Image (cartoon, rainbow, N blue to C red):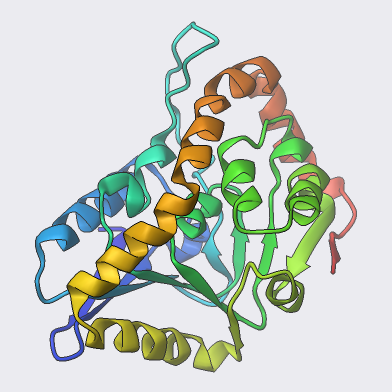
Length: 258
């Protein structure tokens, strides 16, 4: 199992941990399937009223899709098979609140998860970045999710600057991507405090409020995501050229943190 679930029936809070620390909690196909299964199971779990989502270890919350994953793609430029489309709670029709506890690097495909969380509690040591363009890939789904959570200019800068820059937790807080910063050792307790508050309220009212909040942006989100497959098909370099750029990343200068 690559997704660890711990439940506290007394508080009504479940902690979901991406448990691939040695892989910086990157998501392979098994992890993607486990995440979807967990979210769907929580829909029926009356003892779960709120969720904290985090990653194992201090280095990374999630670094997106595992580079070792191979997903055959259809020949049509209008279709993309993306294993991360089903990893988020909203993609699995879960409307119980999810608090993300970001403990290290959050980059690339991590934004599928952050994009479908209600709010983010961040370790002061965490950083946020999107490497797609540096490796000849279109940031489509990720950029759309972040454009809904950040000022447009900040989302554009992060999506376009690739590996050259990383957003600090402080800057993420200043622009509203992060709602609370905690010291690394206090991250999980801070996220749990928020989740326990949510779990202590009548769950019907909480879930209804989650649905209301998402309805405010869901139409625009769906319209934007519908453009993603064609943009990815047209703009991505061939996989072998992406791999060459990824292999050569060690020669690049250290990213600037702002």
